[in-house]
Length: 269
Image 1 (spheres, rainbow, N blue to C red):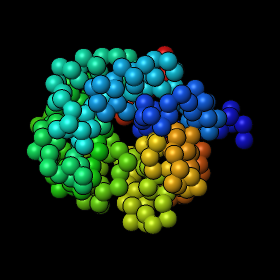
Image 2: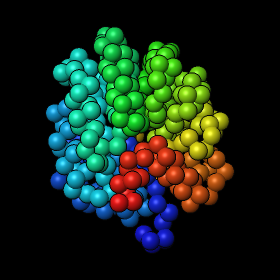
Image 3: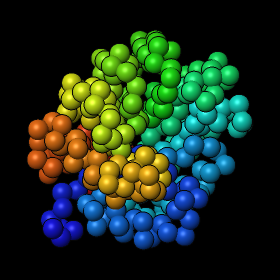
């Protein structure tokens, strides 16, 4: 199948600034295009890296970016202010707020500070109308509670990035109108319960991502992940929803455009 014939798909979450990709960005993005990946969102997780990630987005038409302080970096990096996030969000290729969230697996000792940071990012998402990008690990109860409390205080949009939590958090997120994003984890053979959670969700609330350089789907598991491989995860998603790959690609791309409205506008321009 030629590049022109491939149905376009979006990698909604990758980390192109990570050292794993140093010196390879042109080739990496070219491979993504060859696999039908027409757009990708590179996620900036610290203030120090923002110029680098912004530069990648400025240099490549198909690359957009998001900015936030990763929960595992809370306590190690300077706390962000709302004004900092709002100022950076004015960039035309900045399309999302985060990733932010809660990670109690490795960094439970900063739980209180992570919660404060999460609420700050939520307020930025409200004020900008940009989607919040959530990282959640071993924190389902607190995550569901905070997302719900904050949504009652003022609506905002959100994607649960690389979703691999329990059914309860999935239901809470979907009830709030949020989106679930499939990563390579959903394609792992032992991820039966996770695939069941996705299959129970509305297909118009599903995104796909790589979270590259991590979590490569089969047949690349254990190797460095890259945006081109999102097509492998999407193939699993298509089977899960009983859809042709092209239809699933179109659906998830439409979902992305609905949530990441600024990227859709930029792409049209």
